Length: 161
Image (cartoon, rainbow, N blue to C red; front, side, top):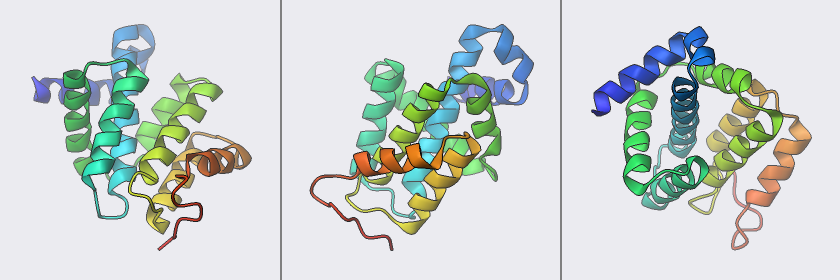
């Protein structure tokens, strides 16, 4: 089942016309693209903590209104897809074309939450979220506001290592 989900979404990501015509396919593609970017941010510092994975699952579940099992399946499929990606632009392009400005802001907010999940922000996580935000055409001022808001209270000035 998982391989079929990955194939379906991968096919959808490469055939953007079918996404526009099939709302279910569009939603699946948006979910996968978002989850892949979230996984990529979580792994950017080469230290994917359990609390990052738990938060990732929770955010996926809440954001897409999924059951715990559905969120886990999506995260697993996204992790497999993230292992294979060379360039994130196909995911960001899909999201840029499919989402409103407010929806893109929400995605960036999710990415900052993942980046701060372990209580610190690495320079790699920071750079990746900024790059994704640029590719989504989200204004830098709004991105920096979201970054500030996502910063955990227990670590007012996280280290950038």
